[in-house]
Length: 156
Image (tube, rainbow, N blue to C red):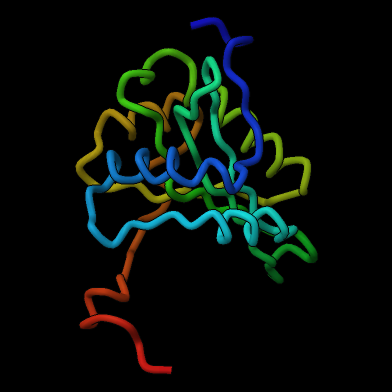
């Protein structure tokens, strides 16, 4: 696939169904539901970017970038990548590289001190890809506590 055939752009509410299919392929879970109105809210948030990779008019990848305000390095934020996915049929064809290039550019343009991501422990092919892009999987150790593991919705 030619790099110029991959369009990286902000997600639009009309992309909800395509993004949902990508997320379901990444982590099958009946609770996954991508709402068009939530995509609109994310688009309006100055510290969050939901980008999609479009190939021949079809959404084939997505990733969420969140800029987190920090106090450690004066006014430098740090960035967290989440829900990174490329359609299985497009993996190894430059879609993920194009998506990451844009995400990284946004993080560095916004003066982030670092770019972090978590990945399921079993996704060794994805880990190798992240390392090829310069991410260091041995620099830190990630920990996750899921709300649903606490027995459902938290009380408000």
